[in-house]
Length: 281
Image 1 (cartoon, one colour):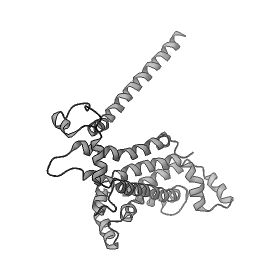
Image 2 (spheres, one colour):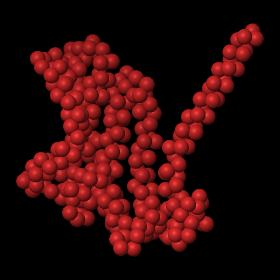
Image 3 (cartoon, rainbow, N blue to C red):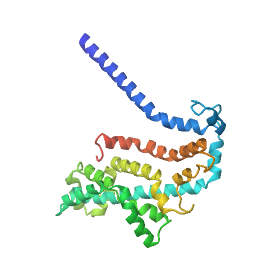
Image 4 (tube, helix red, strand yellow):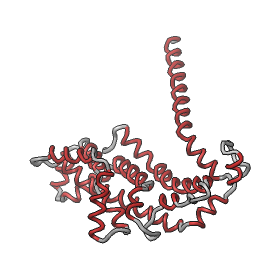
């Protein structure tokens, strides 16, 4: 009995130490974000007088008012939402049939096709920018939402994730659906998609957060406020000639980060399920 009690006590101590360690790591990762939020509530004189002060003298909202009045925040927010949401949904719509074909259909060259998909992950995105821009410019779609969404409509990572998750789906389930008269599209989007919710949620989070914060491609493809995105608007808050107004820049970045954090908070349980290996059923 005493040995069993000592074992349980040691297990509790180890669990507590693990929680403390993980909490310390989490706080370390949260520190830059907390510093950004604190800076956004300061005033410019405070930053000049004591830039390393841990807390502001008061919660000043002037920086947030400046963000909302110096740029068309609503339009930028809508453009960024449409772009990030459109890319994420399009990637999921393409990844499902592509992953299904590579996992469940038997055809000559399937291994080669999968190898080519994986090989595209080795190509840096910057290498593709010039030819893609040239093609879109020739098509006359520069400075449109199509130019921001279509080049990223296919995700090799998404295809890989869906393919791997489909290996846990028994073939007998698909055969039963075929015997009931279901077509391939109904099997993919009606039967398999609900089973792959954790994997699709993970793909959605990765895609949405990445493209929500994307700066370079919108900078290349936009020329005015009509389709300009929020990261570009935040970058314009850096006033030229008088130094960077860091409290305003930080306030803009807080506004930029809120939707991405909200998406992660809503979908995090699906992400955790996919990480621990329950991406399909």
